Image 1 (cartoon, rainbow over the protein chains, first blue to last red):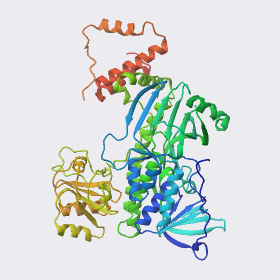
Image 2 (image 1 turned 45 degrees about the horizontal axis):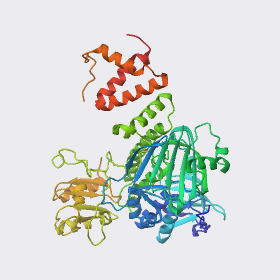
Image 3 (image 1 turned 90 degrees about the horizontal axis):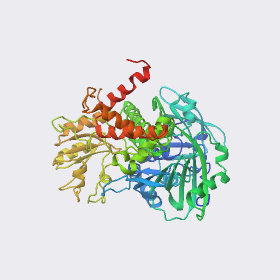
Image 4 (image 1 turned 30 degrees about the vertical axis):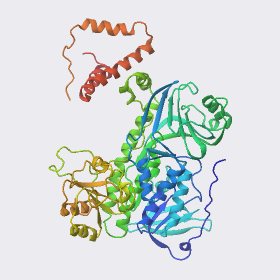
Length: 543
Length: 70
């Protein structure tokens, strides 16, 4: 590649390779975005974590390129969002074309007053480099490159892991093993587990090209364009003047032939015109699948990211949902490891992230049915929608070129405390239990965005005064709750958007988990209710 | 949410039938299929009510899928 040189981190010999088998609280397999995010999160929570990776570099090729607003907020919490946003290409507008005409355009975020944009495009290798740099700053994170897991043996009280290195094999024992080892997850295979679902009979060519162009930073999607008739094409701008072009090829295409530059170049010339000057950086031909494992927790082994669930790329729901898995798991695992929560809390990871995976799979399958119709009737309706969409607004909402990643609302979570009917007689969807806490512009000592005021632990966002004695009592608990007041005497809700986005009245309170999801809300402060909701969110009391 | 009305609801049923045929008069099979698909989408959006649409889909499939005639 012209624009990027792969870093080589090199094999390092770990002290554990000599002597008796070392016992670790957490071992993570796979130093991709999910494994690294998890390791950083655990490390900053004071949990030592070993990360094993069979290679010693970042992703080869751009791979995942779109990071959604929620992912950026998680990366903010991990101290990694600034370099990603500075280097990446923020965008908010998508355009959809049918044949040679613009059908419509959409916006990811419809309002101002958000710290992060709807989406940032950045090559996966840049994200991983940022995460590696951050992970290396944290003393408890032990990154081991060229340490390949070759055996996994679960026991009642631990998991034994056999690791192959250039110096030969060694064994590690751990309390918890987290497999973040990708779609083909060797750990999953070693345990004889499967990820089941549907494979789609279509092939796509991804080409990353280096090109100076003044195209706007937008997502452009074509159905049946003149330069690639009968198929779809997707264009994304990435960092360093690299552009991602995604050509649908059809099931009959020969993947080995299509990977060759002499096949790729004419396709690009037809699209970009004879004058365009560009170079191919990286290309790949892929098929895709939607599948997931039956359980993401298998005793002391947990699965996250592509290892646990797989979607088609349309919708940017792969890496984004994987980072949300890590976000969901880290605080729970940290509390279980240091003995402040029982292991039942980990079952909620399974419940919550399986529901999210099902949502992502449904969205991704719907997009796939629209983009690659597999029956005459399906194509007929697809084309009918596209033709109607030019003139009729209703049909634009039916056009599906990828329903782009939105954060999961953990509505059915066992950790949520149900609203009191008297407090929320009409349900009220704004910041319902399970929703990710909305950001909003504020003024205060931690800067201009509300999410910065949430603690790494539990936070009570209070839209009214809370007595000092109650604030102290909540802060003194075994799992503390930090009270943040919005409004008088607290964070200044400069534009009133905190109150709007939380549908808050004076006195409203929201209990926010360490992963920034709301797990309980009230119209007036009641310490006992908050303490009960906290216990519930820790899966403490009997169900 | 209301139920699908399958009782007579058209003042001039013969005219509706003629209009539908007229909409397809100069079309080949592929064009006809496209017009029908668009018509379904336009009417479904106008109706909006998911129960009505579900019942209409079920009624439309009934004899086609079982292969039986009433």
